[in-house]
Image (cartoon, protein in one colour):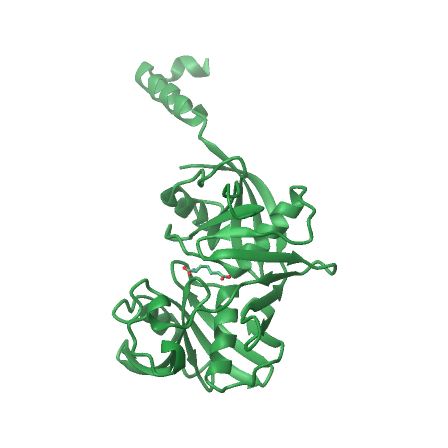
Length: 313
Ligand SMILES: N[C@@H](CCC[C@H](N)C(=O)O)C(=O)O
């Protein structure tokens, strides 16, 4: 009797709504991982050459209210046919832009592959920043051979005048956001603007200075990740990061590598040590083989959080 009391026109509306509700959305299978709280949606695209999601779809999935939530989406792809690679990694930032590399991301990528059944001790991964090699440690952490830092100003890229050997930028003066900064420019495949401060909590207006420096395309034409760093001791650095394309994150692996290199080059700490970098989400350990093979090694965790199917909206 209930149905008979609903007017004909309203019944048509209800039927239309039901049809809309039952129309099945496209579902994406994903796994979620984090490295010191820098969190990523991992997609198993090992049968593909290119990502199965567009930058726009990735941006929607990263939304923390309407999607899964994450600082980026990482795709595990088929290796290129040449170069003896095991896999290819591509990543979109949470705003849909595509960076060349991601340090915490590649540890999550390696752990994801391990959880999918890969059992090698190390992998040669093709990235837009060149070959990167994650090494699986017995204690569950992952060490990554990040390759050599890129110091030449034009290759970072920065338009700041080089003021050191190798055409690099060390403690160079830069005007941005109405302030004068002492800037160090280092690329780990992706650009980093590193600023040393005496007091991380009081010397910067993080929420204003971070985005202003990120978008300072006059000096960093590809935009830049921004790291504010306090030197705690010869082997301990503390940092806050404002990431290009993602904003404030709890950790940045390429950033930790870049700022360690910058600290050594600026004479803030000696070379030859393993450096502990404290980020908002925890610690990474960085070594720069300056003077030998010039490579940077990063060690830290990568942890599975959850997996599921998400609607593509
Ligand atoms: N969180 C990452 C860096 C991700 C890329 C960055 N936002 C960029 O656009 O360069 C890391 O751990 O390195």
